[in-house]
Amino acid sequence: MLRWTVIFIILAIVAGIFGFGGIAAGTASIAKVLFFIFIVLFLLSLISGRRKI
Image (cartoon, rainbow, N blue to C red):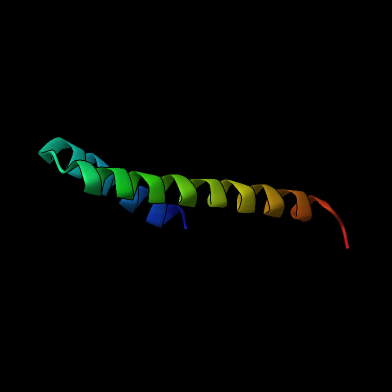
């Protein structure tokens, strides 16, 4: 999932450089959503990994 976040961030930066405002905004919002999902999943796996079953 982190890979997809990085891909969308790069697409947003490239689209922003070339002046495609709508495309850059769309890919940036997708990258933000994927980033926060990644952070939540990372924290959940970190917490569950510390518990002993």
